[in-house]
Every structure is written in structure tokens, then in C-alpha cells.
Image (cartoon, rainbow, N blue to C red; front, side):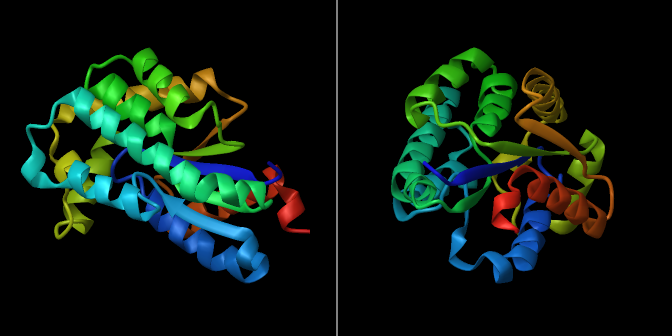
Length: 213
């Protein structure tokens, strides 16, 4: 596959989706149809239906392993339908969340075990790793405050966890970043949106300059 996969990670309220949307606006005119943007869970019809089940606040009693399996199933279908064809066509794929989210949320915070989630997703992805993972790092309290201030009309099931849940998520992301320094790059997400976007754009252009020459 000649394309490149860049994923975006962070705890709830890190601002990664806001920044990603702005980045897309800035590079889409230059890249045109060489740019593919997507998200997880979701990104295609079947995976979006699975997403609706995962995020529905009516499903608060969902078993943790069921949740992990649904994320992995959505990820597999998403890869087959959208990501892999784009990479085979030489395109740049920007994806909002990937395996690292499952490791942090289901593996660490849900207590399933991080290695168990890595193993499950090794099967789901057939070992497909991102060329770059941008990790939006923000203190837990800042992220939670942003959720309550800016997402009052869209607070899904995963936003309604206890504080300790998000401590585990944050700690897991820090561990992932430390263990995979060649893949995962931390961005200070406490900065203004413009500053975050500028940092991420510089990072992307340095990692995949062939798309911007």
C-alpha cells in the first residue's frame, strides 16, 4: 500500500476533533481527492450502525467485553470498506481514533487488560499500524470541563464515566506514547485551537512531505 495512515488520539475533551476539522479545511484544497478523512467507530454504513449502539446512553449496562468486541468489529469493517482501499490507491488517510483508543478505554479504563485489547485488534486490523499517531495531550480536569461546557447537547454514554475512569484513560495514553515514540507524537492540547492546528500541520507535513510538495 502506497498511502499513509495518520490517526488522532486523546481523552474526551482534548479538542482533537475540532482541530482535525480545521486541519482538513486547510489541506483539502491542496490534496483534493488524495485526502480521505474518517472516524472510528464509524466511517462506513455498517460501522456507523455499530457506533450508534456503542454510544447510545440507553446501553449503560453494556458488558465491557461486548463493548470491546463491537469496537473491534466496527474497526474491521471500516478498514475493509474505506481505509485499505484508500491506502492502496496511494491516498493520505486521516482517522479520528484507532486501536490506541480501545487500548486506553476498554483495555485500561474498563479493566479488560491492555494486552488483551492489543491482541484482539491485531486480529481485527491484520496488523495494520498508522504511519503516525497524533496524541492530543490535555490534563484530565481541563478535558472534563470542556465536555460539560461545549458538549451539553451531545454527551454520550462514554462521557458519563466517573473521574477515575478518565485518570486510567489518560495514564494509558501516556504509556502508549512512551512505548511507541516513533509512531506516537504528543501535542500540547491546552494551547489555542490555532496553535494546536499549526503544530499538527507542521508535524504532518514533516512526516509525509510527499503529499505537500
